[in-house]
Image (spheres, rainbow, N blue to C red):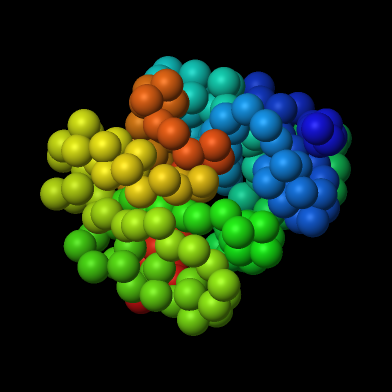
Length: 195
Ligand code: UDP
């Protein structure tokens, strides 16, 4: 298992490595790994939401999302090797997943959006295996049903788009019950892909 370099920021250990190295790390790790992206907005939410702060502090990997994090780091005298902007990074990660035959489940966003995002991903990455999708409004109301759906799909990777802080707190709270080996909170990614 590769140990990714990190830098201290917002009281977290934020990954500072090239996208390829991070993808390799995430797709070769053995134990279950929960990934959180942090941007400048997340740092503000963290300050007033202890459950969210705890979810970030205990995440397996915290990835820097956006130019604001790079700037905040620089102001604290540290350089982040690469901005792993979620909208670019997650599709790259899924290319690597497809090459390894891994499947992905998309959970979150308004009705129809996760399905549209899945369709868009398959258009861009034809070999990607979609294990399933479920919206984040009606679909999120029944946590037991959502977890059952995700686990029954056999997905290797779970993307959760319920917004900050809900998605990262949800993944933290239910980690023990979730079968996918790799889970990521992905914000508005499905809207970006499916819109
Ligand atoms: N979302 C959801 N259920 C909710 C609230 C939000 O599925 O109860 C979805 C929303 O539709 C969007 C995603 O969460 O696809 C991210 O929402 P937002 O842009 O508010 O969050 P951020 O980008 O700040 O994480």
